[in-house]
Length: 460
Image 1 (cartoon, one colour):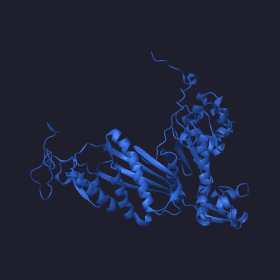
Image 2 (tube, rainbow, N blue to C red):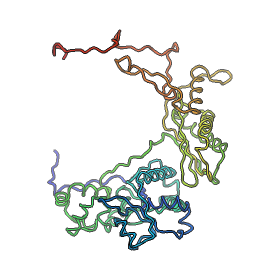
Image 3 (cartoon, rainbow, N blue to C red):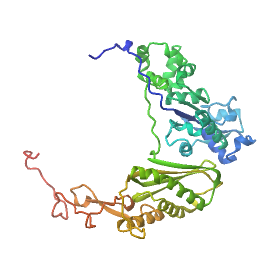
Image 4 (cartoon, one colour):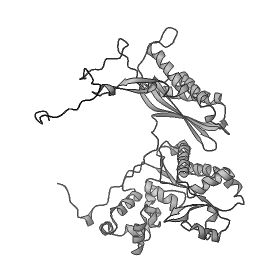
């Protein structure tokens, strides 16, 4: 028998498992920090702010140019967000107003997300000014959640960024703590005490809902915890209770990583940065050797590899290459990355050096055992695959194309061109691809002729 509860007597939701740990990072001055880094260098926060006019970003809001971002030095003054540019300049004549550039801010935030890959591959964008990192199972590699958070904030400070962070078991709570409570690690039993004193805006509600809650005297999240849920849902809608349950960890909230998670990954953190191509390739070979053991245990080989180079100033280079057949030979992987680096040339600028290298296997497939010659050289299609890999690594995946059969009754659509390195090599016994089978028109008209239906039945 299924139990039925009236809306006002519903049992409380079952709490989620607290296996996940979510690190939320908030950049309150993202736009102005991006501009300051370009003007004054990455270490401007450590050396002290230069004696320059205050920086503000303005955009058109409600048919007027208004301030949408202010640097930290303006906090506590007469300037405020949403203020008109004319009024702001009247208060501060030396104010340096820069037009807001949302696209540049997004590119900068995506670069920061790539930089955060050093902590976890599960990094997601969180609005225009934040990131979400799923650090479940990763914190012990950095000495615990406290040390990981401290390391992240310290590195961001050296990169000239104002950042705040918080860790908890729920994305909603991490989001709220990072913006309204400062850096903290929220334990599983401290959810309600941490959340209760925060304002309603910490629940990620629309402004009209927050204003309506203030009108009835509900100013803090703790005020909602003692109010019956049914009247709240009727008056303010179901979104209020959803956001509350997400912050309390009673309702699931997925995080979608912005990049696919690698099937296998190995990395090397360096005591001293490296700059030479020879050193990079040497470490890439060592990382490939580390991957080989696990790939052999899985009876697999990599089809798509990615080498990540983390530069000391925060920039991350991603170098991808594909293999036409499953590959796990460390020497060949190292040679292919060597070919790719020769092609990229100055695009991969070492600057002051790379401090972290990571090799990912993005896609892997089963690698069947193959017999080599007495001299250990490759034979047959294996040698051809090595040729495809080398040419593709040097000239790019689009340099060689191969027709591939597709499922279509139209002869002109029976095949498409694909990069040769992406086509699975499955030769037949005779070394010739099997012929296309199925119903095909024997002859094609030069010009299509209209077909008119003479009867709806029996074939429709």
